Length: 356
Image (cartoon, rainbow, N blue to C red; front, side, top):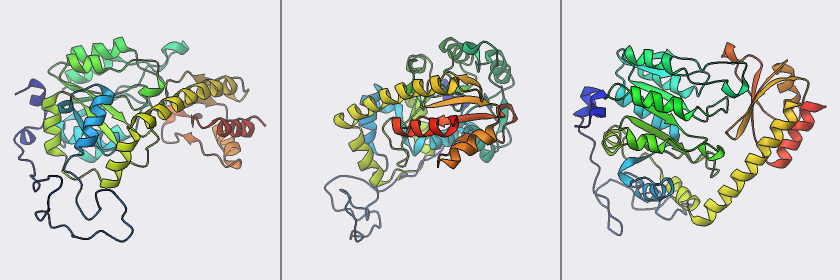
């Protein structure tokens, strides 16, 4: 047994997965209690009267090629949020195990840990007056939590909501020191907008390192909900036992498959470059406003800033029909605002609203 699996819940290591009826193309399927007729208006290629494949193998093959990983090391999920959920359920027993998060960060780590009944250990990102070092990883703090028996460590890079990338050397230190002791999950949801490399080389070196990716951002498919877990083959096999079959719906499979075609990916890459340029333009324009107290450099598809009066700032945007994100439940982010980078005309509209 792979040593990383020793970290999983013991009862799940022996779990017998649900075995669906045989699935094969071009066969008369009378083994799944499906309706033989399509619903009126169903124009999908496969037909919604039939269950989707137990696993969307066509997408696994396409994403394997795109991310450059073996098919045995990738598991498709309904957004990276489902990946977070299944990882916590697999490695953390309710009332016994703990999860490390580094706030301010993506709040779904906290939510799924609380739903599972896992203890949450918070190691806040380090703050500094040096802009380049702001929101850095507290490696010593994370290692202290692992010493206490923490099972999972979540690191978001680029981080949401700050937009900052975590230093590769700091991530490597955590991965090296946690070997055999904890699973390190590196959430790369915004990687396409960053100049930083993927942590894939670390994941190849260490079987306890897991990567999360998503198609929500860079191929414009937030409404489809398609994410991926990239991990060692034993971890993927175990997660696949915990994740039920038929979770990825037929229309989503067909839409994602088209979005991963060569022409679509070319458009996506062009749009990423446009958003990067617009991000730089927004940062330059917003950073010069008197009401903006601080603006942090972003590696994501949003900008993050602190204003002198967030209620007034957000209200001015709202009066122009624009919604911005604030963090009323996090006192450490008082008067901070996250602004998604839009199309050039969207960004012009925002700047006009907050500068008048």
